[in-house]
Image 1 (cartoon, rainbow, N blue to C red):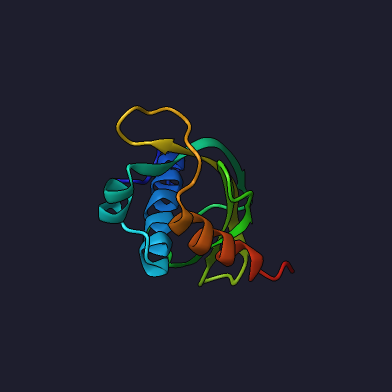
Image 2 (tube, rainbow, N blue to C red):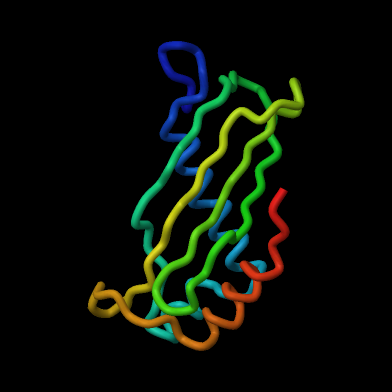
Length: 130
């Protein structure tokens, strides 16, 4: 269903995988949707920067990774993503996503709660570039 008229994986599938991967990572760190609701806070996407570096085809398998590269401990955090084809061992896609903290009840930007600062901020500070 995600194969386009070029017989490649459609761009929408990559963006969908970004969301899935980001949520898996947040859950792993201890910030689930349930915790977001308890805190009345969420991280919403402000901007995606997408880099398609190669095509994927039906039955290709990929390794996907995400990590937090920046957290200002106030309103913003940024994640990077990398998808590698297991067939070719080459990077086929990278992305960077910028998020803003908002109140779930109002949708307005709100300062990160201490739980976000401690978890997301620590994840960003332990990231080693390169």
